[in-house]
Image (cartoon, rainbow, N blue to C red; front, side):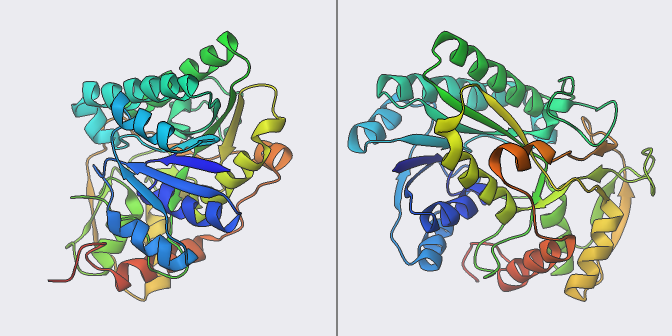
Length: 339
């Protein structure tokens, strides 16, 4: 089976490509490299010992997509391509609606034209907004606190409407919690452009000496230590969830909505302590104002994923931190060449 992985050179996409190839799928990576590097795919090729078809293009560009579907018989799409920074989405909402929503419309139209109607969509726990309680189940009310989350929610609704209009579509919506960690080899990992938007690369870059200190965004939340609590999930567990979803996609007779998380909540300061233990490095931090669009607590009830996908997260917070440190210490400048 040929699987088109949009955004496949990015953080989650590159790790998922490894497991897809190991599971016997033929992978075609499609990426515009706005927040990714071609080097990630070169390293994936070394890990799996196989060449990967890599195509540079934009999901908003019909000609780019037609070219891919004309060249290869695509059986299913795993759709990672999208902008993902909460703070940036608040500052530049139209950029997010254009890239994430319009891009998905174009992708689905081209898929239908080429008779490919199976898609696993990279959604987010941000669609739950500020949940009334935790852990979060799939049936909880949906609302969002920022344009990034709204773009994910709009796409979910759009895909549900698409299924209603044509139930030959096979659609799985995977709601991620907070991906962290790296491949155990330490050769691929999270390499954000510029200042990291996510906690773990900021901690790792501080530990490796690339940044002077970590900004802890708010310490007055209603949590055990005042800092935000999230469900951190190892990226390889998350990648495994996509392979499991793809394996079972043809057996589903409805749009499947599934949380991918561990069910455990850790605060920012919990993660700092765990990372210091894993790396043996001090992580200096200072308290900064809350970030617009952030909430106090967010962690999953992963029971449904176990039921329908036979999937569960297996890697601990210690493994998450150890693998992140291995990646960062081996690659202090990410995928960029050492100067």
